[in-house]
Image 1 (cartoon, rainbow, N blue to C red):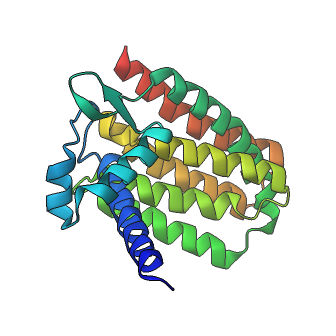
Image 2 (spheres, rainbow, N blue to C red; image 1 turned 180 degrees about the horizontal axis):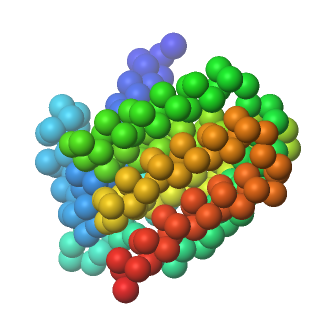
Length: 222
């Protein structure tokens, strides 16, 4: 490998590290909507030159997480409430279907794993951390929908969750009381699956669970 190639690989590696670091801060809420991303400061914090940070910011702009404003520079994009609404509505439908199709294939080991995650969520309520709660929430639901035998529906579910991540959505940050209800509804879902409830009942419960979170967010936003 030539010296130039080595240098390019090194820059690429630092660019990836910068991308992951800045994206994590945006998703976690450290960099809030409208926050000005000063490249020199970020580069100093990461111990990099400005070049890989600039490349990282360009990638984040392409993903819609960063925007450029005249006379301001790079800033963290705002959360689009309409996009959030459509994403949650779609996810309630496809995740409900995926959960219903998964139910007959979810064994006692998977149920125990999901219940353990839900207990972690219950513990998280004592000293509430919305970012951690949201991550655990995804872990819980992953157990319930990952057994879905229909790959097309499963792909739509994954796309929905990825879209929520790009929106930096931690709904529980805005409606923390909804977190308590969510934990209770999780246990009810597990009990339905354990009891061998029919697909329609499970799908309806899963859809209601997702829709209730959206309704709580919309009620708070209005």
